Length: 204
Image (cartoon, rainbow, N blue to C red; front, side, top):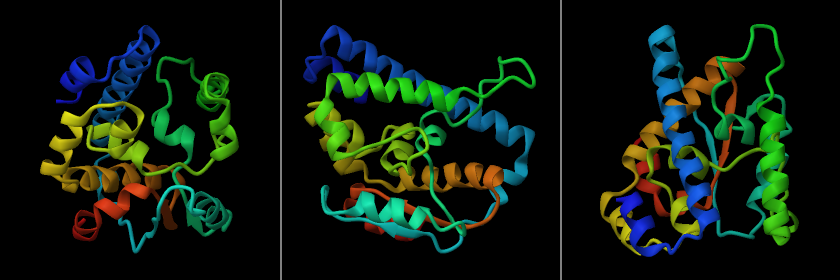
């Protein structure tokens, strides 16, 4: 549904097609890596995500500031941009070599800032910034992030009909992977999307 909507409605430029393809392949690669990690370590899915804090509100209402502020507490956990964009380390890199995921993402952020310089003023971000949950739910292609970056009305109608339950089940699973790596803590999570999915969020 998403790809059909991109092809029929989004009127993507050449760069837009390249960026969209990169996004979709990255999500699919991360999904395969998550599944492989669960086969190697089934205890990942036994991680308890206990009473997370969800920040939600309209865009530009201070939620990003609050999220970053609460993320400073060492007892709190927040998904970082580098962990949601490149969830898994590159297993092709030689053992003992440096993990360059953060540097790679910072280059992507700098390139995007060159295309849309106003965004870095509105929403400053680095690889180590606390990231919104919309980047997590986009992995299963049920996220308002996809609708807000492209004109894809048929996808939005499909998402409205389908709901967000699958997305939040995956969201919990994603946090279980991060928590297995980071250790226990209280998750602080933020996204404007939560306003549209409170029933699914509560159920999960």
